[in-house]
Length: 430
Ligand SMILES: Nc1ncnc2c1ncn2[C@@H]1O[C@H](COP(=O)(O)OP(=O)(O)OP(=O)(O)O)[C@@H](O)[C@H]1O
Image (cartoon, rainbow, N blue to C red; front, side):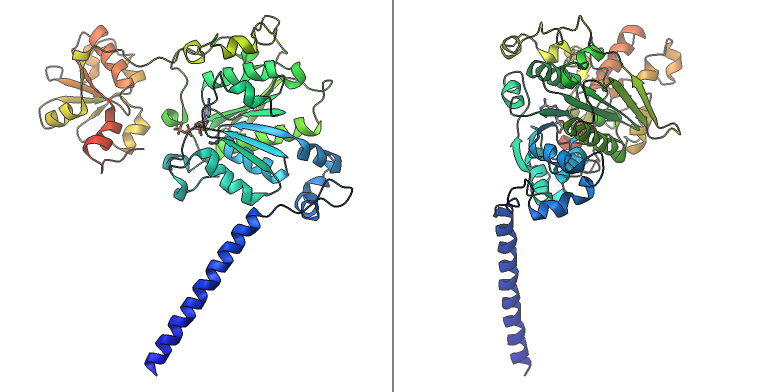
């Protein structure tokens, strides 16, 4: 009796497993199936009528707007904090073709804001991971991935396949490149950014009359002055909101809400922790002396390496110390129990997340304002080592301490990040 019920159970489990695998293959086939054809004489299928009905009845979209959405081809550069939400809504809205450029892979630190990716896809190319989500969201949209870096040599060939670009990147050199190529290729750019609790949004090169990124920022910011999300942090929904707003601006451009006549250049700023959260500023139109907008820059010039965008933006490597002013993480491990001062120069918020026992926190910006060695509040007769997260700020700290306060400090190469990768895997990295 007991045996037979065990046998029955085993049989049932087998049956269930077969059913389960049939269901799984069915799902895969469904995904691989061509999407339902358009209704005869129409551009939408029955599925699409249902899918887009709620937006087509909005007067700002209408059925003719839906046709424009379906006929449009957009390129999203960066499938990160801005790109993910923008992609979600634009694919949901039924854009005809979407290209996704991103050379990076999904990291666990991305997941609090890069909502197309998931824990199981850590290590996969972001462009591919995003596609996996998006094809399920809307199989009517054709999605092409470019899992490599946008560069001077490939940008024009990619841009020419699209009508509009969303700049969802995170560095000035990518922004200048995208803007220059878009102006020469005569396509508009929806540009967003976000850091900590704030974000910005604008539409560039609209109808080849609106200003470009260079018109807004003729000169790049001082070298290494732009804080990334990695260093400055960002609240997920803040950057998410900016990405969503980029999707709205995209729809406005595609469906013709903006026209040559009514478009006014603008810059919207959002401050999520202020009561006056949104501010929109009128911006000037194109600048006559803008080398991009007056077409001094050409495709040939850029493709042949005429501009080194990294150099132009002053992306410099942080080699500010001599070899004898630095120690490796392995050397520091040996010194760990010796009598010394460890100056942690990260911002206070970083220090509060994790720090070495006994370390003294003087953030770099505060340190640079100290004029007298006695104000440091440390025992300067002991050996002094400086440390930070990746080993950049600690170099600047030691440079300052050694040059201005006449100390002989050394920085720890690679900082806390290297400590957790090379020495102690249990030491939290963030
Ligand atoms: N020139 C470029 N070509 C392709 N992708 C780019 C380019 N510049 C930036 N990106 C991509 O844009 C995305 C920007 O995402 P986000 O600002 O959320 O930061 P992140 O680099 O993913 O994360 P973090 O700064 O925390 O390390 C990244 O995925 C990055 O790889």
